[in-house]
Structure formats: structure tokens, C-alpha cells
Length: 481
Image (cartoon, rainbow, N blue to C red; front, top):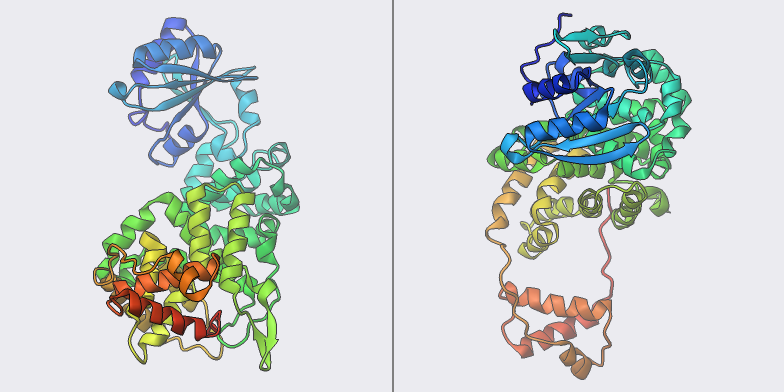
């Protein structure tokens, strides 16, 4: 492969001018070289030189930027270019020996090349075949010891493959599989960053399946692995573990092409999943949607059932997200999607006979907000992943049309200022109740009934509370799928 074009390298003239001023060799390394070889857009730059601090000051002067020291061993300095010169971060690392020695410590061959920017002419130093790996779209470790040196590379392999459209070599996958238990060693924050990037990639769910084949996902998510071998029967053709992986893949397929499923809302769905954190939460929510089933499995009427697995799964998904130190908006959204994944199906079943309840629709949109879009992706994916003897594969297009139509109801059930006909004092004085969860539910029920025009006076609100108190509580829920 010929030398890649340097036209897309930002601040190239400023970098060369700073290096020439100091008479210091300057190399572009790491992901930036990889992306040049793959003809991908460049992100922030990694550079190496013999005098990182002085070069950083010279570059900052050229770019009207700020110098931020990062590490002392090896010396690593960040230059943050000003907005006026094109805001961008450049990390400059001190060379501790020959460039080739540094490249030998890199993780994957496609990352183990350096591009000399100064002195000119430019030259590609490629002792490990990065150019050939880029041409073949192949990912391989420089040495297997690189995985021991930093076990974060176990998941980074799948992330890079998903982001860059690479195939992980079988020998590298074997080396990763042999070290799968090491995946729990890296700092959780570093792991979380890799996991979110993986999930947000167009083929992230596919690479989760590869992680499962190699035994890595089971180490990372033992709560999910608890569903391996757990038969579900009825609607399902796979055990809980296999079904979860398939639903993640189906969610990815829908998210990549939302217009095929939601023609009237394709642009809105596309905008929703364009946000990396939201897309990561959708795929993780799909993967974990049944994570509560193992703890909820009971034998009932001649078969196993999983009553309440949605609520149990939401709590477990939140614990998993916190353990993995996922960003709050990813973890919270994931738990929201897991906890709500039965609700649209219940609406759909009701609509088949009596039409959807506006009360239930309003609650759904009120509880989920913008994430109702992600929820509908997860639920469609769940149904697409059910191919057991009780399933009807012809129902999926109809379900998609129903969900597309459901989104049209948002304007009709848009939140309005709530009318409070009763207060807590009324419940205490009239019914002798004490504050608690049931107390709050009754007040919310009267507010919701007022919103829907079902009641309009304090007396009617009191009558409603009286009727609700005579009902069994909590109400019996339908059977989850």
C-alpha cells in the first residue's frame, strides 16, 4: 500500500513548523495512522517525539492552544487547540527509545505503524504490517503478551472490529478466549468507555455474539449468562441466553434501518439512534431485557413462567450498569427499557379487542418520554427473536404497523397541567390512610382521571378513591412473554 495522503491531517503545517523549530523528529502514531490507512475520518491525534514538553509548548503557540500535562512516565502532554484554529486535542508522548521499540508494544498490528511528519519527506514506518492489515481489513495482536499487559484489549478487539469493519483473526480470537477471565481486571471506567463505543457501532451486537462465542461476554455479564440452558417454551425457540443475544442483533437490525419498520417516523427514529449513548442503551436494553427471568422462573400450570421479570430485570440492569460504571444516561435508559418492555405488547393485545386505552398510552409516553422510541425498537426485536411453536411469524409486520400508529397518539395524550382535586390531608381525614406507596398511587389516580375528563369535582375524586380501596391490590398482572 502506498503512503496515505496527509491532506486530512489537521494542523499539519503547525505541527511541522513546531518540530522544525526544535529540530525534533515528529511521528503520527496509533489510531490516526490506522484511520488514514483505512481512509476513515480522523479524530484526535496521537504524536510522539523526543521532547514532548517543548514540542507541546511550540505547537500550542502555533495553534493558540493550551498545554495540559497528563503523565510523567512516559511524559505525555495534551495540546487543546483554540476554537479559532479548529478545536481539537493532540496528545504528544515522549519517545523512550527507538520508534520501532514503541511500536512493538502496541496492541494490534493495524495500530502498530508510525507516520513521520518531520523531517520531510514523510515516511511510513510499518514493521508489523499495519498497511497489509488495513488492506485485508484484518485485526491481529502484535503479540499475545499484549493482551496480558492490558486486558482491556480483550474487549477493544471487538470494539475496533465493529467500528472499523475488521475481521478478528482466528488466532487472536483464540488468544482472547484463553484469557477471557481477565476481562474483569481493567478499571471499570475504561471498560465502560469501550463497551459504549462497541454498542454504538453499526455491528456492535454482532460482535457481542462473537464475544459470547469466545467466552468473554459470560465473564463480563455473568447475570446474563445465568440464562444459558434455561428453556422458555411456547413462544421461544432459544434458551434465555440465546434469545437475549438474538434480540440484541434484531434491535441492531431495526436501529440500522428504522424506516423499514416505522415509515411514518423514520426520521425521528434515525435522530434518536444517532445519539451514541441512546443507541448503546437500546442494544444493551435488548440484550438485558430478559435478565430478570432466572430469578423469576416458577412452575405454573404445567410450564415455567416468569412473572414480574420485567421489573426484576430493570433493577438488575441498573445494578449491572453501576457495576460496569456505565454513563448515567446509558445505565438509566437501559433500565427504563428493560422495565418497560412488556407494556407495548400489553397495549397491543388490548387494542386487538377494545382499542388501546388512552390512560395506558398516556402513562407509557409519560413514563418513557423520548425513550418510547427506543422501547418500541426493543419490543419489536423481542418479538422478532421469538420463533417457538406458539409464535406466529406473520404478526411481526402488523405489530410494527401498530407501533408506528401508536406514535401518532402522542399529540392526543400530550401531558397537560394536572388538576389536583384531593390532597394528602383528604386521604388522611376521609379514609384514615397514612402516607406511603399506596397513598401516592391513589393521589396520582385521581389526577390522571381528572386529566382524562373522567372526574371533575372533589366529591367525584373521593368516590373514585373509595372504589379503588375496595379493589384487590396490587392488581393481578398478565403473563409476560
